Image 1: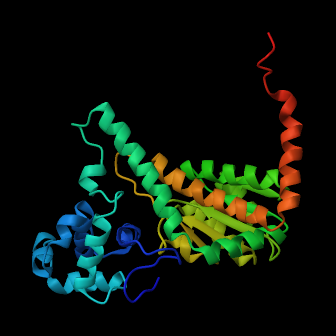
Image 2: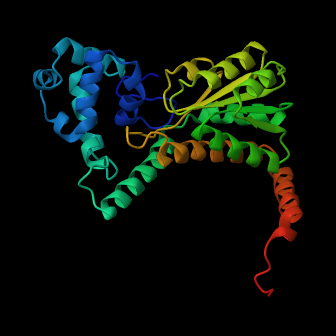
Image 3: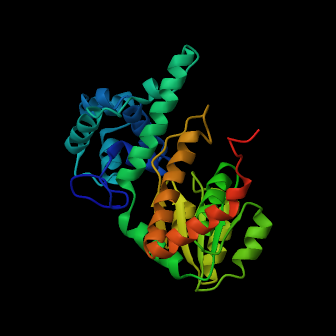
Length: 299
């Protein structure tokens, strides 16, 4: 993470609010209160002096400056400017506005969920590391096998990636049983690729499997929302999402859609390394299951 004038997670366009959410779990208690105030209403925060923001977060001006430094910003004026710029974007809504509450109607629920899901895809695409994506695709294209680790909602993402890679002839396995994942990781070599999927990046079972795969010499890839998470630290290549979960919507569709967006980008990038071969494989596998489709013209 670097930047003189803004924050850049992975090489895509900088997004201040995305970065604040990504860093939130690693912040101190006082810095976390500053982050929460900013995320709750970025537009309002942009209008505050450093003293006012410090008072609102029940902390000191020094803590606010330390928070800016954590974001790679040169000072508080750049934070205010960044918040003002992002607040003007169509998809920049305060947390309080985009979160679901007891007073919401069914229409409100639908609108907010659709908004959050669409935002997750757009923000993920903006900040996705192009170099890491290319390197991961190239590693998969020439590897012996791909092991994919994920549990819970992340297991769904892992299975989707396995199915996609399998359709273009890549030997891939998605493991959601922690014991099987560990035994599989123990057999990997430097010719293989291991991919860990976890929104939080703090799922013990996934982290252990990816770490073991790394010990065995495999190229390791992490798909996670938090660039400073334990899973990210165990990876050679980091592909981050930009989804926001709330207590009510932990494991929400937004986080899975963001991860599936990364999976689609990775799959297509792998396919592009030998597009003619991938196209033939997809056509062959589609033909193999064609007879199992219902004939709409039949009785």
